[in-house]
Amino acid sequence: VQVAESGGGLVQPGGSLRLSCTASGFTFSQYSMMWYRQPPGMERELIARISGSGEAVYADSVKGRFTISRDNDERMVYLQLDRLKPEDTAVYYCVRSGGFWGRGTQVTVSS
Image (cartoon, rainbow, N blue to C red; front, top):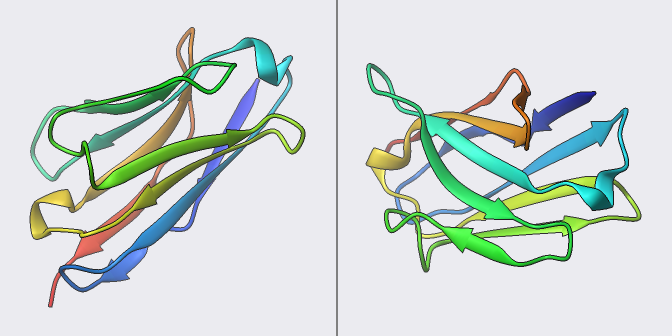
């Protein structure tokens, strides 16, 4: 099982980013996928989860600003980050249910 994130970077407050996660080594459509984040000096936080059929759940901290989606044919998971705030600065991780983590991608929100 492998998952790998991409798409992080530096963005100004109010801006947008799209994170991508590619997955391999398992039957992708059968597993829920999640995005976690870890701000500097803080604990990791589950921010979004999507079932194999596409049902999504969000943490209150990102609800209405972030959107998780998936393409089962392409074995991809996406996290659209809109209306970004400085407190969204964190390393963002893609995770397959069962505890398989990517290495993370840095998102920095700063003017």
